[in-house]
Length: 191
Ligand SMILES: CC(C)(COP(=O)(O)OP(=O)(O)OC[C@H]1O[C@@H](n2cnc3c(N)ncnc32)[C@H](O)[C@@H]1OP(=O)(O)O)[C@@H](O)C(=O)NCCC(=O)NCCS
Image (tube, rainbow, N blue to C red; front, side, top):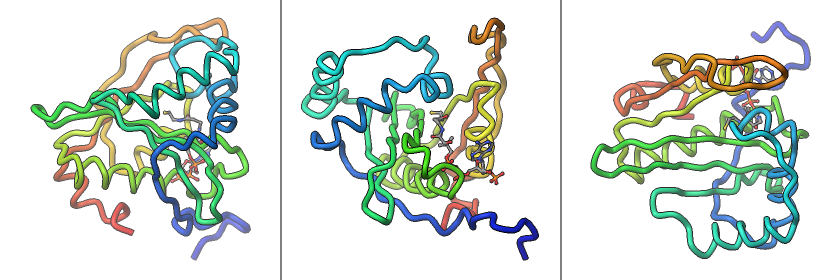
């Protein structure tokens, strides 16, 4: 029994991962130009981008995707596109890659959509891409991402010390991975 009143069941949310859609350009522009999201998911300092420049970048992502990268939109069960997920650095020889997820729409934070998206993304990496190792990184201060990847069974490998300079001080970047055998034996991911 859950003893915390009104705490949502984080395993009830459902999402689909789809390819990028041009008609969602403005959502992607908003998420790519959000200082708080930038603080959590990018190691480049926030810099405002014009819609014109972003349009060209987004067009390229749709028409000329990098061969070692897959970009997805995260669509919630109510039909709303709520964020993005990606796989990058796909190496078929070594069978490894890295992942990231951004729930751009804050109305969907803390309701299990991150869990639902990472389930789908890992299934894609291990079942479709036949990866052996999936890696990810998190900044020392990003508690939500750390909790999510640890819930998903990622193991901490170490830290890149004082990697990031933010808010007047240095922060570590933590390196995580999950191997295929760990993924297959992790029951929480099967739901
Ligand atoms: C990180 C992120 C994807 C998590 O998605 P979410 O849908 O909010 O997370 P969920 O509801 O599935 O919850 C997953 C875990 O994160 C925790 N969590 C969610 N929001 C949190 C917050 N603001 N602070 C602390 N923990 C939080 C949940 O409690 C849960 O942990 P638990 O299993 O210990 O209970 C989302 O917060 C996000 O997009 N953040 C901005 C971008 C980012 O940081 N991306 C990651 C790097 S690429």
